[in-house]
Image (tube, rainbow, N blue to C red; front, side, top):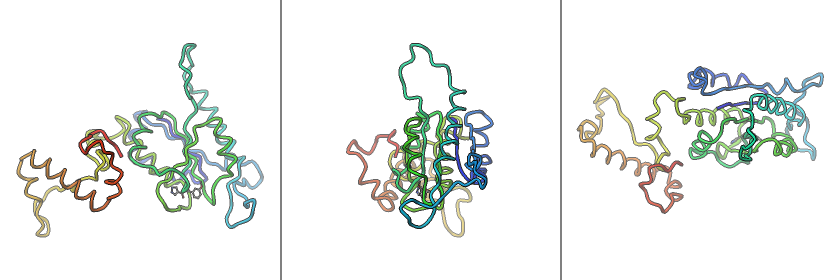
Amino acid sequence: MRYDVVTIFPEYLEPLRLSLLGKAQESGLVQLNLHNLRDFAFDRHKTVDDTPYGGGAGMVMKAEPWGLALDSILNSALSNQPAVTADAEPHDARPLLIVPSPAGKVFNQAKAYELAEQEHHIVFAPARYEGIDERVLNWAEDHFRVMPVSLGDYVLYGGEVAVMAMIEAVTRLIPGAMGNPESLDEESHTGGLLEYPVYTKPSVWREREVPAVLLSGNHAAIARWRRDQQIERTFARRFDMIETYPEDGWDKKDRKL
Ligand SMILES: COc1cccc(COC(=O)c2cn[nH]c2)c1
């Protein structure tokens, strides 16, 4: 997977290099390219924002620097593109352009799985200020599959935090990018339920004991207890997940929220 991020704060994304991505990057599974938007602002003051047409508070990110930054990513992608064979099926070779925005569709684990399985090159355009001149997103439609995505119903100073969250959520689902792939199938939101509580040594801590079933060695009872905990927690904390659960039954293992 290749990620390109265009931002006025590339240093914001540096921690991704240290964390899980570090190993995935070394193994060549993941490539993270950071682009400073200011490198594409060619006026004397490297201006990336200006006042909004129609008035109102705040500033809007200018179109030209974004256009040039995205051009340069497209050019580098084209030079790395595998040759198209004559009988190749016509397919949509446009890279995905994700624009974190409060006005986007809400990101979730199902979307993370979908991106990890289906995408090979994702470009992120985290905005600052009040957003990006809309004409950039309109122009981009001809060269990218443009996808506004919200991390949740709140407003951030910029989309960089949302990009970090999405890159982490997607990368850990790429086979081999995660230390211990087995732990994927029991985590929260797989099977449409929240995760059960976990415990480790010591068996008594500040007079609190580990649930006895977990020490019993009875694997069927342990599995049942864990499932009950998942259902209990989901009802208590995320009833919305219950309501949206499809009628096709509770035991679909591969359902990913
Ligand atoms: C594209 O336009 C804007 C405007 C304002 C802020 C931002 C940054 O993203 C968010 O605030 C966000 C992302 N998911 N939830 C909140 C983008």
